[in-house]
Image (tube, rainbow, N blue to C red; front, side):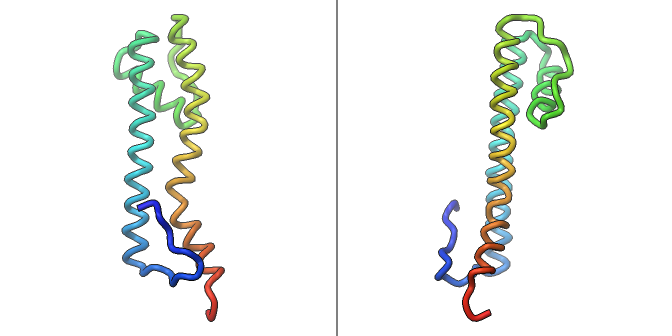
Amino acid sequence: MLKFEQKSQPMISNNAFIMRMGNYFMLSGLAITFSLTLGMLGYHFLAGFSWLDSLLNASMILTGMGPVNPVTTVAGKLFASFYALYSGVAFLTTIALFLSPLVHRLMHSLHLEGK
């Protein structure tokens, strides 16, 4: 799934490309789900938020919008700090993962000989 064709190989068919995009969409969804679950668990158990508030805060931090509820515990504040740092990297990495088949196809089409 994570292997792309080399520039000396022909471009894959449109159907194969759509399947590849679907696979990378699912992989990106798993990465977002993992990150959201990690945030929910941390906010629930370390900050003492309800499950719904944990989901809301984890979602907002993961997308870069910022926290909604104030964190009052020391453990919760430490978690929120590290989760915010993790979220920035995780979100950008997930976007790059999702777009990688599209970028590869574009780059591959620019390097094909005999167009």
